[in-house]
Length: 173
Image 1 (tube, rainbow, N blue to C red):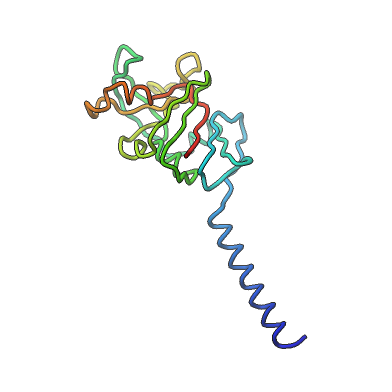
Image 2: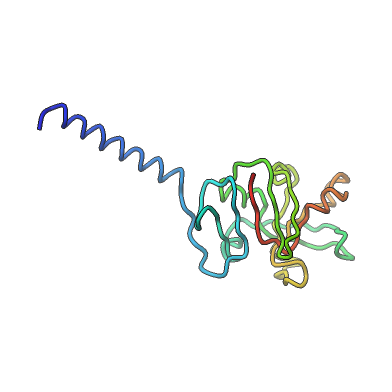
């Protein structure tokens, strides 16, 4: 073997090693859900655990940092405590890169939410109401909720419509 081919092999091996390290750090797969998935996230995401998607079960959602707020809503006759991960944390988990979130409920109701709402308003993807899991018959198991009592701006039909319950899917665009 001549010197040029050895050097070419060394360069190629170094390149492959560096490329493999970069790919491993930047295109990571999430662990697959161990239980029944309750949320599917598609679109402009940087990780996956299913073909072109991230599927999350409730344990995976519970493993994210949990946040709570109490707020009045049009759907309950008293202030209610909502608990779950921040929508911003869910978007970070999947490395979302889009400007809008297409949210779909179990009954196929769809709404578009600006991705900026997640960080700007402290939106929660609630899994608990008053410290109890949310049954499907009562808007569960997941409910995107804005902290309506923090701002008069949020107490409007625009934000009430973006608060989607029985959430089953997010599509990042």
